[in-house]
Image 1: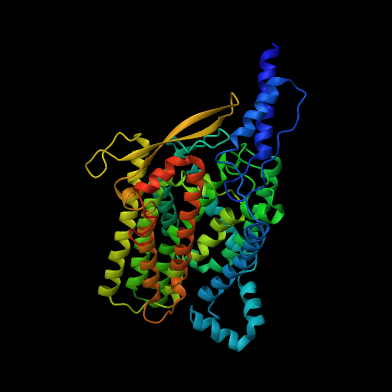
Image 2 (image 1 turned 30 degrees about the vertical axis):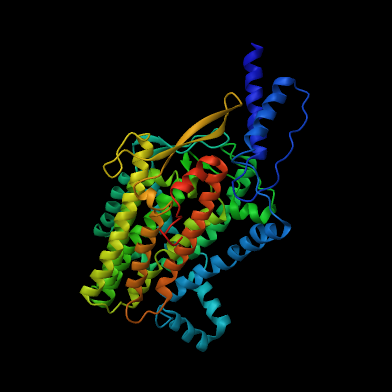
Length: 506
């Protein structure tokens, strides 16, 4: 009778210790020393085992005081304050009829007339913290997404974390994409709302999302600190600012719903996908003719996002999910930044058509779709290789790969166990270690060029510039994580696949 109690107590203590030490592979506090225990050798061994679990992948980065200030204080502050303001400003410029044209020149003309203070005051007044219609729209939009979230599908798993957690997901992304699209268009055909609703309430919607997103990140901070769902949680040790920015928990869940999957995929990606449809319709009703640029931009992005939902389980195994915690950077970014910035180039075309001829727009569209399809080919190639455990052919040949070992904690036994991953080093993944990013950037720049048109200036390129910086930084962070996790095996992989993103260049 006493042995089960000892086992449960030992497991509970190990979980408490891991949770206390739990952290992201991003900059974090120095590892804490195991505390002394008078509960016997078994408990001491369990604590020692847990402590060893942090040596490899969870070993904290060594930062100088200057590096810590820039990475953990100044850097987050430069995003925490300007980013929400920028989203309000971009929404005002692109959607408010008070700004003559949805361009930088239109914003400049407005500032000359009303002053900088008047410009910002009017922008915040336009978006506010949402309107009644915006809040109702968001409630219905997310309620419908929750209903589809539980659609039946095969259960698939994310990578094992160093603390022994293996997240499970329902693989129903395609069903969500198809059903939700039909629901959105069908509701419009039934007369429940106008198909251009996403454009009509866009400014107040961003205001509502901004307000909710900042509060929700605060809620996630408290939840991750005191009520985490897994041991992959806890303070980074760099203070309140960084913890709010980076997040406290890797895999939070609320009422059975995975927060990251819902916010990142079922809300933000769905909003982006349907925004183009709504914007195209509003452009047509506004100008009484179809602009080829906005049509092709919407179609190309819809294909890209349909591809995303086909590949959703691959995304759930990407750095966004397995490294980035649910904080301002990840969660606010998907709630506000994605709807605002990722739709910017298309939204500008609603009030300011491109002026492109059909042949020119078609040529840009063809390049973008090629990037989308090649990106999908690369992503699906690796996902198939992983799911078949290397027992497949890549480009008609036996795959070339490296068997990489890594360690993780078995949370049931408290023992360190060795696991194995296969690092694909052929096909697209033999050209460059992150070659899929080159294809994704090709698509992004094509959307930006469609938005530029003949008169819209450089503002439609903002998303493409941002994504370029983001993906180059993501490649760097991903490799840092892999080197920490796989060590010499990843170094061997880097010797075989020499280039990071662009062959012979970078």
